[in-house]
Length: 254
Length: 282
Image (tube, each protein chain N blue to C red):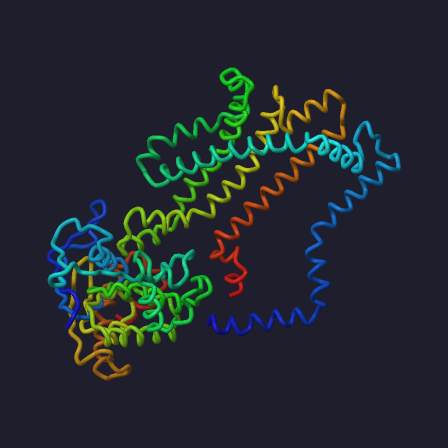
C-alpha cells in the first residue's frame, strides 16, 4: 500500500488555557482510510489542522512518514476554497509550474474535463468540490486530509462525490484522514472509524471487509447504531456550539 | 443544478428577443442615457438664442463652441490642456504608486501597521488643500507644488483602500494557499493582491476624482499655464465663454477618466460575477 504512515503521541492543543486536544494517540497505517467522528467541538478539525501543518500542537509528537521522500500532505475543506479569480484549471495547478496537462487530466478524472476554462462562479457546489478534489490530487498526496468535504452538499451530490472519491482511491491508494459528521459516510468510505470525545480518542472501530462497503448491509447497520449510540453519549458533555434544537430532539433516545 | 440553470437561461433570453423588435430596442436602450443631456443642451441653446438667458450671465452653447474653435486655432487650448493633463498624470502616478506601496506594506505586515498606521491616519486628517500656502512657500510657484498637491490628494485614498482590501481577503483562502505550500511571494501574488484588487480599484477611481479637484485648485493659484490659468485669465478679461468651456473640459476629462478606470476594472475583474456577463449568466 502506498501512502504515508501517521504517528501521533500524546498530542495536546490548548487555546488560552482551554484544552481542545487532550492527549491524542493515533496510528494510521500507509494506505489506510481513517474517519474521525464526534460531536462538534471535540477537536476533530483541530487535529486535522495540526496534521496539515496549519496549526501547531502545544505538546506531543506528530510524525508523517512517507519513506525516503518528504511526505506530500494536501487538505480539502468543507468550503471549496477555490480562488474566484482563477479558472478551474488555474485553481487546480495553483502553486505549480508547467503542470497544465496533468491538471487537465485530473479534471477529466473528476468529471470536469470540459470546465477547465470556466471560472468557479459558474460551477455548481458539487462541481466546485470536484475541482477542489482535483486540486488536492494533483500533488499525488501521500496523505489526504478531508475536513467535512461533502458536508455542505445535497444528499445526491454527496453520494456521487463519495463514489468518485472511493473510485479514485481504488486507482491510486493513499492514506486518508476524514473528519465527518456523517456516520454513514464514515462507514461507507473508511477502514477504521475513530470516535473523539473531549479532545481524546474514545473509540477505535475497525470495519470489516474492503471499502467501499455496500450501502444497507446488516452488519453496517448494527455498527451504525452502535456508533450513533456512543456519539449521543457525548451530547451535553462536549457539545458547545450545536443548536439547542438538535439536542432536544436527540435526548429522548438516550 | 447548474445544468438546469444553463438550460433555462438561454430559453429566457430567446423569449425576450421575440417579444420586442431587437435592434431598435437595443439602440434605444443605449441612447437613453444621452436623452437628458441632449434635452438640457437644447434648452440651454434655446434660452440663449431666444434672449431668455443674458449672455453676460451665461453664454450659449454656440458661443462656447466658437471660443473653443478660436482657442484651438491659436494652439492655446491644446497647450494648456496638455500641461494640465501632464500635472494630473505625474501627480496621480506619484500618489498612486506611493499609496499602493505603503498600503501593501501596512496591509501585509502587522508590525508595519502597528508602527505606521496611526501616523498616516493623523496626517490624513489634514485637508491637503490647506497645504497650498505652505507648498508655495517651500517650492515657489513652479510645477512642484501643483504636482505634489495632486499626489497628496491621491495617496491616502489609494492607501486606505489598499490596506482595507488586503485586510478583507478571505483568511480561508490564505489558509488554503498555505496548506498548498505557496511561498510568501506566491501567496501575495496569487491570493492576497487579486483578493484585494476590487477595493484597490475603487480607491484608484475615487483618487482620480480627487486628483482633478486638486488640480483645479492648484492651477488657479499663481499659474502661468494650464486650464486653471486659462480660467483665471478669462475671469480677469471677463470672458465667460472661456470659463464655461474650461468647466466643460474638466467635466469631460473626469468622465473620460472614470470610463477608463471602469473598463480597466471590467477587464481585471472579469472573473467577478458582477463584472462578467459570462459569469453572471448562471
